[in-house]
Length: 365
Image 1 (tube, helix red, strand yellow):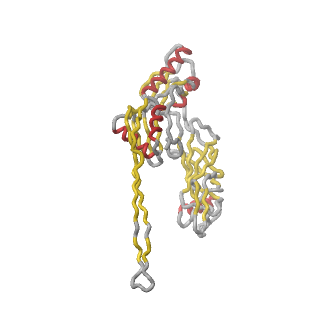
Image 2 (cartoon, helix red, strand yellow):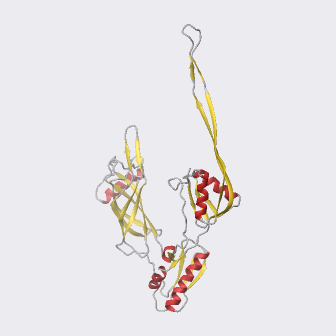
Image 3 (cartoon, rainbow, N blue to C red):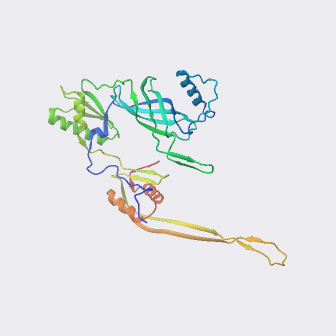
């Protein structure tokens, strides 16, 4: 059986030889980040798939509070509507977002609503960790999943109780995010690594020396590179120039295994010393064929069931193959020669690591 790159086994190189990327794709300026927002609201217009007010009392209280603000008194009414659902609304507020900027929001049900399809989110305030309101959200909820229910069967695809509103929130308050005026700033690597930090600093110094006749970068740690902008050059202008520089990031030799889905991700620098591997499987098949023993018409006896059991054992595989490679291509070729399924590949890689022949870290998720 061939080693398939498909649904159950994925073999990916974490980095390709000579694959240079922009600095702006692997690093960001310290302090320039997204901020998370959260809010509580109501989705209306559902076709009988909303919350059951008896099982979700907070939905009923929210409906009453909303109607009170609109001048309608429903305090003593026994609400039985199923067209309303209580939801949590979340969003990421990007840096430098000005007033009036539109951002996407995610809507998630809190109660026992079956689906949010066709619903509309009412005006919802969204606040940050400091409790201040930074945006308001409203709009039609887009849901990709669905649920179909009958008397004897229910079919659900995707997650119909969570939806998305593109450009559903409007920024009402700006978060102060300022670039340093004197040009002193830090670049933070998304994946900390000593070699990558040195390469970023070298690339920036080579560019700044050729353009401004001075070196402006210095690596501080595996995840930080200090920048001192040239005189007379704005921080925004200098960061824009630095972000377009190309570097080749380094990554540790690593194998990531997800035993639940049978997914294996192998990095480019993973190497296996030459080893001999044998893998086999034992299959035991038990077949029950009960037979009925019935006496003759005039015989004194009774009908009984006599068990008939057949057990077969079959062992496959067991032949020895050589695995080893100084490159990802050679490693894949060696694994393909074994011709086993992903669970066996996972067991083989773990055994090779235990034997000391796998020069990489194994991360099991």
